[in-house]
Length: 132
Image (tube, rainbow, N blue to C red; front, side, top):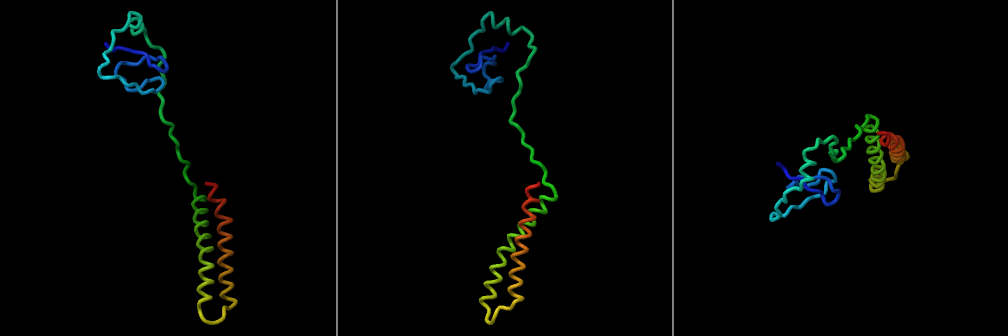
């Protein structure tokens, strides 16, 4: 016959040798020298009574991630392209400055279009990415 004891924290019944209280989850440290005392007559009577309500089992909450929509993935791609455009524009301008000769209007237009593409991609991509 299994012997029952009280949890020191919540006073719930705990079997001798259990590592945790089934009610409050408190860790129980039974020393190896500690021998179970015979239960009192009152405890023996309680053990024979039917249990109508079982203590609830507590588990770690499971967090489920919301699946990413196609629009959010598309927004993320636009943001990445926008960042690449912002990085590429100054690099293109520096490459043009290092080449001998004058910078043509076409070359400056290329840098300007790259900056505008970055602005458009970021302004469209960020809201789509957050929609997710």
